[in-house]
Length: 279
Ligand SMILES: Nc1nc(=O)c2c([nH]1)NC[C@@H]1CN(c3ccc(C(=O)N[C@@H](CCC(=O)O)C(=O)O)cc3)CN21
Ligand SMILES: CC(C)C(=O)C(=O)O
Ligand SMILES: [Mg+2]
View: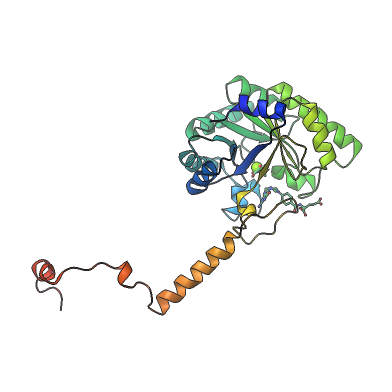
């Protein structure tokens, strides 16, 4: 399995790091076969797989449930799991308990938390406790209600300065990696060069050390609107709908099941076993 040492070397050598979200067993298996470098069990699961309006509804139990499935499907891929909204803000004690539970129960390789400020202290304590922590700056979906929706971040000089400072602060606190979401590509390049930990971008241009996208977006599995930064690589949704419509038609027209999909008992066996049961 590629690990943190590999990812840091990849950054130093300018080799791009490929991250993708996964929320279930088959997707994790396919990602491992496709040689994805790391998987993110993102709290985006709430929006793309569970139908919530935002990531704020996702619970710790839901994250653990999905992360365990991903771990079973990708035993040889680095797996990062999002700590969900509300699970690392109440107190240091509760943050530590929740992180330890998530890390132990899922067998993940790292956990991810959004933001700097108060969260810096948690990054430091969790790292000290032995849990690799991925930081997340720029657009913070768990704080979208405060940030004014899913808007490009870092568009003033003071925000840009703050972002660079925050990136350096999460690195000092011990973060092993940084996800940078929805900021101008020039600023993302600057941030990536300002820290020695690998920076994984989403909607942050080509000059971060790696990229991450949501699996449902890149294969169009779902009816949701796609963010501008998504590149589409497949059309699973259309295929699923087509297959379902054909199945519905086949059952109604009695073309399924046919001889290929049923089970037959020989005549003598039929008499022996069922006797007078059948008419
Ligand atoms: N399906 C999905 N994909 C994601 O990448 C994703 C989620 N859900 N949920 C959690 C967060 C939220 N994310 C999002 C969602 C939408 C935009 C979006 O629509 N952005 C506008 C740009 C707005 C601006 O110009 O300021 C866009 O048109 O892309 C951005 C990030 C990224 N994450
Ligand atoms: C968008 C990525 C970075 C994420 O945090 C998620 O999928 O939850
Ligand atoms: Mg997330």
